[in-house]
Image (cartoon, rainbow, N blue to C red):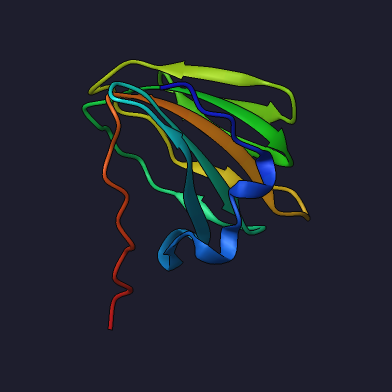
Length: 120
């Protein structure tokens, strides 16, 4: 069944908070084999180096980030995107701007989003 969704449907106050990365994520749409996730990352927020079994295409909607991709530091500005193959190390991704970064991640297959657990 086809669906229609709106950007406002991704209300971040209802999202999964990942405090250690200073970001919140919310699934905007999901099918059997694909998922779109909106992430809002506060200034100075960092997603650490990691890998995952899903392929990912990311698009930075708002803000500025720096990242390590293919072993090189790159600057990503609003309107730019990136592709990350499954199981490939990438990051960290750092919000280097003065405003919240907004990113759309298109992921296949869909992932289970989890809140992180801040260290005590």
